[in-house]
Length: 101
Image (cartoon, rainbow, N blue to C red; front, side, top):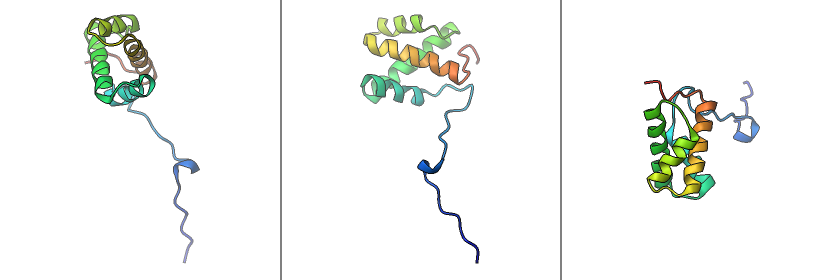
């Protein structure tokens, strides 16, 4: 009888993949907003959803406009800035075009 290979674990080389290219994942970005700012999940989701709506409405990812839009709706400055930066970074990394419908 043959020898079965040992099960592998994450430490032994499993690779974790991100979301599909070209798609915006609110959950993915919201978890980073939460991790980096300390806000709760619901607040992080609202900030990211609003930021994405602002980007879609303008057809571009402009971190300054997103920060201003979030701040105008009462989002804390640090959360506004971090959310805008993370949305912009995500869109660049995953080739997401907010103008695509």
